[in-house]
Length: 124
Image 1 (tube, rainbow, N blue to C red):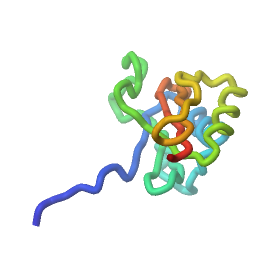
Image 2: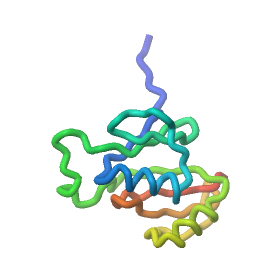
Image 3: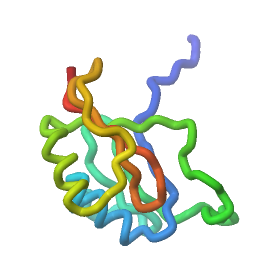
Image 4: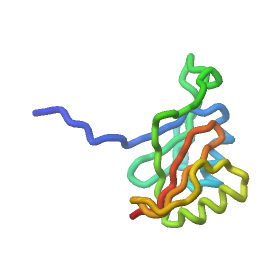
């Protein structure tokens, strides 16, 4: 039998301040934290693929990396992408792509507290 892989089923970002990032993703992005997760991570329910913010791996100096996540696209679905955009703008979050109608419905991109760029889309 040939070995196969289904693809990503868990995505985590190494962050400088997990409490700040967890609050950002819960309060501003609207993710729901899962109870009793890893002591080095805050895990969120995010549909079929779980998402987490976690402490850096041993030996990783995030401050030595010029741009975290450069070259990687992470997209979150929200039926109310416009509402998420408004909440982020009201909180002063940097929006790197204003909302546009794209192949996945209304979409926009923002930077999280560590500079990771996230795109939110409404489907399509």
